[in-house]
Amino acid sequence: MSLVEITSRIRAAEEKNGRISGSVSLIAVSKVQPNERVLSVLNLGHRVFGENYVQEAADKWPDWRTAFSGVSVHMLGPLQTNKARQAVELFDAIHSVDRPKLAKTLARLAQERGACPELFLQVNTGAEPQKAGILPSDADGFIAECRSMDLPITGLMCIPPVDEEPSLHFALLAKIAERNGVDGLSMGMSDDFEKAIAFGATHVRVGSAIFGARDYSAR
Ligand SMILES: *Cc1c(COP(=O)(O)O)cnc(C)c1O
Image 1 (cartoon, rainbow, N blue to C red):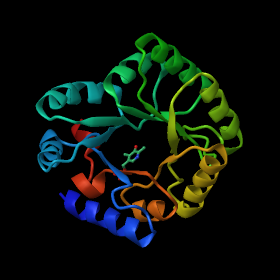
Image 2 (image 1 turned 60 degrees about the vertical axis):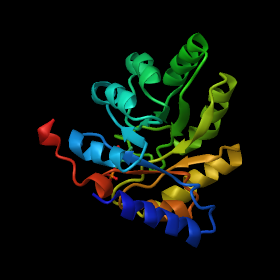
Image 3 (image 1 turned 90 degrees about the horizontal axis):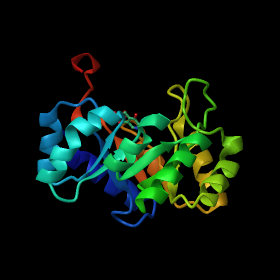
């Protein structure tokens, strides 16, 4: 358990890169973690969490939102259109908006509810066939399309290919955001969040470095 260590490394990276202290938000990625590990991080006062699966989040977070005030839960995993309604009810932010069909559904739900979670558009910076996200060459058009639907675009998100230097991908995402006037950058995980901060990350998504390794067999 090292929330304190990760937080202090984030503060150090902010300082080193001339960023305002506290300007990088830490999303503690609690997917697949045993409840007692998540509870101990809640008890330390941390309030921003990330999940990948709608059903898992629905099982865990409504109770914890009642027990702890100020909780914010971010959806990080691929989102099926038929789960969009449940997702907008459960999450404060969705980082995986990756296609026009999903954007249209979210826009309709936002109209209907008069509210919308914060949205991050996922860019497949490595153009990997198995990975979600809009291709870099389609990103400007997709951002414009989402804006034309009045969707609130908080930022862009990427997951770099595992076997490549992440800095190139962080730089690419930052460039796409800058030329489109998008402020938020959701990038950086346990192994590379300090690099991401150097490239302008506003939200880092850190799981195993806080909670320990995930045991998928226990699900
Ligand atoms: C699981 C996950 C993370 C956290 O990964 P760690 O390597 O455990 O820090 C971050 N972002 C996304 C999109 C994830 O799916």
